[in-house]
Length: 341
Image 1 (cartoon, rainbow, N blue to C red):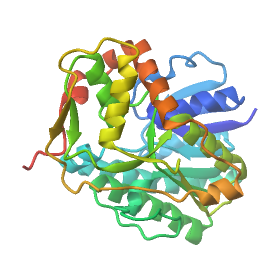
Image 2 (image 1 turned 90 degrees about the vertical axis):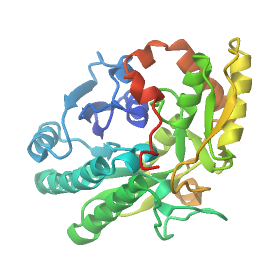
Image 3 (image 1 turned 90 degrees about the horizontal axis):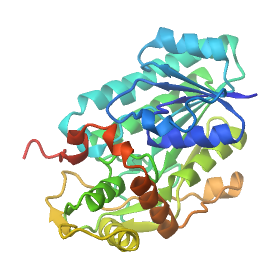
């Protein structure tokens, strides 16, 4: 049975990826430092599986990470561990520097040591479309310049550069992926879609930044995870792969779709109304990826339409009310990213 290490596996994308890997008969070692966005509820379906092992560890703890790698000798390490919330990075960029840059540096140093004796392992570093910055026209290609706008995006751009430098300088067997906005089950409600669903379910107003025209390319998390497995199996070392749906919707369109979906499942409270709030600093207007490379070379394409994906997402939160109980309420309800105003 092939072994895979997933870092950040108590989080949103990581836990969905582990679920998919287990269904494909991989043995998965989940490394997570257990931060505010980690949630044991995310892995409750498979926590007792004989093909699953959880280890609490920080990427900055090089000796512990090396011990895990040397013990299990995985086929690959998929790195999803990261601080990811833009608003949180505006309020406190320090932890983004520590975890997204220094954490990746220490992971790379550890991985270098590991492959000296275990050269069959490769690293897949999962990143974001936000590294390209504002894309007002067209779609970003893998060789486009990075122009990150937020401390979060800058920290992810830095981690990508570090990984690529180790590929070039140390011949590290690694691949970098950049994905568009994910949504789906198990996502922390600090992010737009689960935040709106939480507010709908709790009869609260629906906050939308600015005029709601900020456009994102939305991909259902299972489609992203399927793409990562394609990269794992067929991706070429040293390459970058964009992963997106080629479908953009602005925040207002997302909100209105969720309201329509909710009306078919529950009775809406009187306070469930769109409320425009002050925009966050440096808010990029549009992100968009050109995913033709992975579609052509690895024969991957997204399968879940945005309407179907939003329905599945809403239904999951509706049917899993205990998910929210595992999180601090302040992390769900408090607005971040405007401390200095």
